[in-house]
Amino acid sequence: MTFQNLLSKQMSRAIKDNTTTQERRDIAEEFGISIHTLNSVLNCKKKVSKNNMNAIVEIVRIAIHSANSKGYTLTQYKEEIKKATEAA
Image 1 (tube, one colour):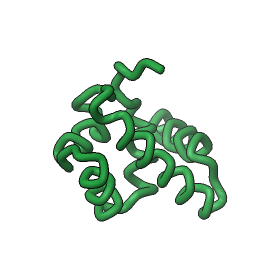
Image 2 (cartoon, one colour):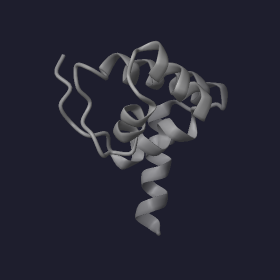
Image 3 (cartoon, rainbow, N blue to C red):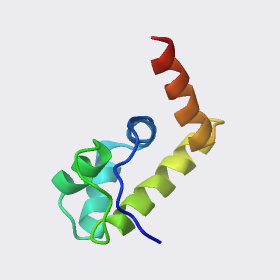
Image 4 (spheres, rainbow, N blue to C red):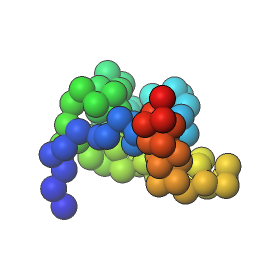
């Protein structure tokens, strides 16, 4: 699997809306990256890379679980954000 792209703005927002600051801090620590690096990837400032991909996969897993607990899939959540931003 190759990770070399920035997250989309919609996916970034979906992940951030469905995870807490503490969850993001814990993931960064668990995977040995700085919170700054994780936030830079989540804010579309840095690309997903081999060094941060495991943390990104885990934060996406948490975001999916959170979205599911609200009755959405993360993809549905992302699409709702996209529709809202296009309508604005």
